[in-house]
Length: 81
Image 1 (cartoon, rainbow, N blue to C red):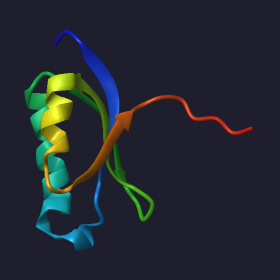
Image 2 (image 1 turned 180 degrees about the horizontal axis):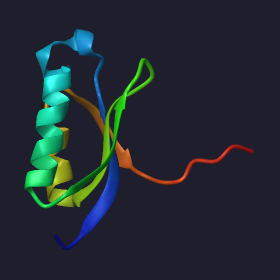
Image 3 (image 1 turned 45 degrees about the vertical axis):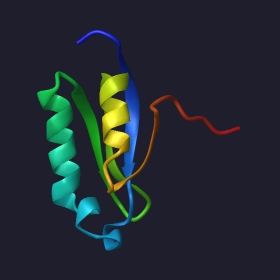
Image 4 (image 1 turned 60 degrees about the vertical axis):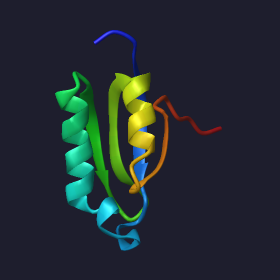
């Protein structure tokens, strides 16, 4: 897959309905892999629910339309002062 970038996909709280359920997250992660992308990490905590992976900008745009997705941002190193 050419033109892939690394992203973090963050879902809305599960209380926002079935579109933000664990099954919905798993379904979108499977869609990424089925489209030639790669899932690096899954997140399921009180702070954040979602996954990190590498996939195309086109797929990013498609995932952003999912009603359970809160936001998608570039994945990168985080540091403190």
